[in-house]
Image (cartoon, rainbow, N blue to C red; front, side):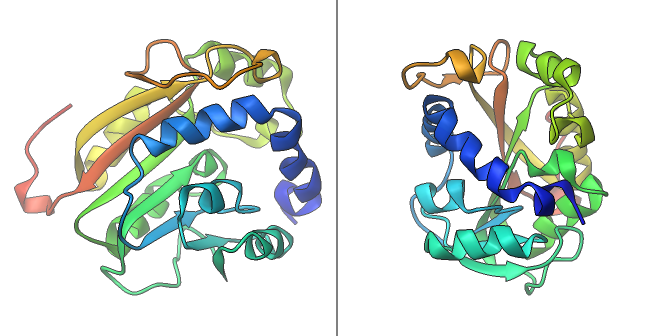
Length: 214
């Protein structure tokens, strides 16, 4: 049983206790999430992000979390990111919001995202940047969730995405203070120099046409 199966209620209540941090992340994600098209969130959890962003399909390995996501209006499927239960070229965009740090095989998850995306489809990956103040805080705090996380730097993630077959990168950031200290919705900024929550947006490119971009 994973930490998310054991503590799914604690996970979901975090977003209520840190509402402005959550809303700040939503505002940043809105900068890159397509307004149209069929979307999938890998690691949908309790559906907090998918329901707020209009992502209609979600997959997760926690049945308790999926039950909550379903009540929030998300069409859910049980499964793992390393072996997605969807056909090739099924989605216009795929989102992986923080979940990549908690999977067993990140490269395989990204390969699966590449597989289910349509040609030139969009991938959005949000992480807690390991190099940021927030990444360092979570590594020190060792919360029940983050003590099991494999945090990425933006450079590491970009290299991993590039090697998987993605290009045309853009970056947004938010969370400029510890979540408990945020008392209004933060304005997202381009780049990744100071925010703890970083979004990498990129596009599926045929592997024989990729040009070096990083």
